Image 1 (cartoon, one colour):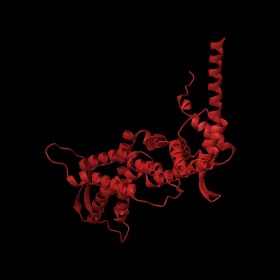
Image 2 (image 1 turned 90 degrees about the vertical axis):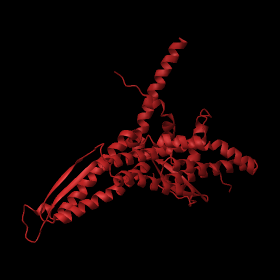
Image 3 (image 1 turned 45 degrees about the horizontal axis):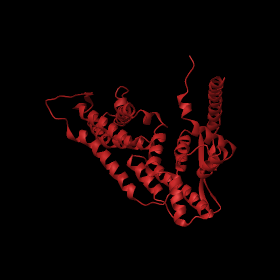
Image 4 (image 1 turned 120 degrees about the vertical axis):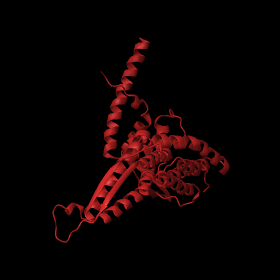
Length: 111
Length: 236
C-alpha cells in the first residue's frame, strides 16, 4: 500500500524557505520579499508568519541562525544545515510527485 | 525609529502560554526588526511616518495570529509537546524514579551500605545517617522535581498546562508513595511502596508542595511579562 503524504500538503512553507536558504543565507524580511518576488505574489500571508516556520525549522536543526550587523542594522540570518539540505531533497521529490499526480488528474479532466 | 506594539504583545502572549522568556524575547526582537524593515520601505516609498507605521503593522500580522502560529508550530517540534498528557505524566514518574535511584545509590554508598558484605576495615554502615539521607532526598524531591518539570515544559514549548499536569501527577505520587525505614546501628529494614486509604487524609506537605512550586514558577514568569529587558539574541 502506498503511503499518503498529508504532512507534505502542510509543508509548502518549509519547502519554499528551505529552497530559498539553499541559495544563500537570508534574514526574515529578505525571505518574505524573495517569496513574494519569485512567486509573483502568488502567496498572500502576514509577513510575521515566516518566523514560526523559521523557528520550527531551527528547532528541528534544519536551519541555523547567526546575528550579524549589516549597514548599522542588526539582523538574524538563517542558513541551511546539512540536515536541511537532505530534507529539502526529500520535500522537492515529494512535491514533484504530487505536482505530477495533480497534472495527470487535470490533464485527464481536460481530455 | 518608531516601535510597534505587536512584538511586545506577541512576547506577552507567549509568556502567558508558558514559553520561556529567552524565546519570547528573541521572537519579539525579530518581529520588531521585521517591522522596522517594512516601516523603512514605506518611508522610502514616500509614505508619512504614521502611514508607514500602519502599513508595517498591517503587513506583519496580528498579535493573536502570530502568537497562535508560533505556539502551534513550536509545539510540533518535540514528542513531549505533541503528547503532553501522556508525556508529562510519564516524565513525572520517570524523573521520580531517576531521582530516587541516583540519590538513593549515592546515599547508600556514602553511608557505607554497599561495603556491608565486604567488611572493609574502617567503613561502618550507619543506618541512622542513611535514614537522614533518605529524608533529605524525599524532602528535596517535593521541590526539585516539580521545578524540573516546569523547566522542561518551558524548554520544549509545551505550555504551562503540561507543567501543571506533571505537578499534579507528582503531587498524587508524593502523597501515596511511602518509604519506611526501621532499625538503628548497622541493622534496619527499608520498605518502599504506594499506599492510599480513604480512611485517612493524605499528608498535606507532599500533596501541596509540587502545586506550590508550580504556582511560584508561574508567578516568576508572570513577573517576566512586565519586565522590560534589552532584547538579546538567543539560540532555540
